[in-house]
Image 1 (cartoon, rainbow, N blue to C red):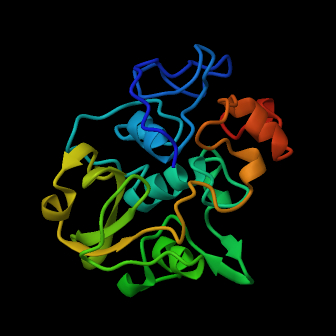
Image 2: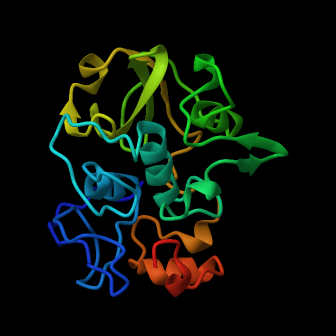
Length: 228
């Protein structure tokens, strides 16, 4: 997995004004535009009120414009787990998302709550597995009970039984398996951070690649970013 970055290099404020300036656990030099890897991305965006992070909120506050499943899906994309996505695309790239001939709404937790096939069903289709007692580690998708009942909310593992989440905003919630009522912990089928498209996404012991270069590898010009 990606190393757990401990430096406090601020995330770069883009010339395109894509992001606000705030401290985060971001790897690389001072020209880093966004955090790469599941845990660095989550620790950067945990309190953002919207995807462009034009505002931030206090811990425990609601984030109706950047809800839980979207936050987890974008963080997983930043770690290379969702083919073709980097974490910064428009919502239309996450709903619908096509995988093996099936459409998924990655902005939705699970069809157990009704509605479309969601993030949970997509991860299961990719071979992720686990149950309510599985270990929570960096990169775990932690399905928990929300206001609508079981599987109504999802948090993201960012460490050993430590979670970040959206709506409501949570940063490094310790003892995650008791902080929330856990329905299922989904972990990837292998120890590798990146299970597909690895050429575009740096992994452990590789040189950090700035985000604009990773976007270019996917054929996307940074100046054409949806928030540019």
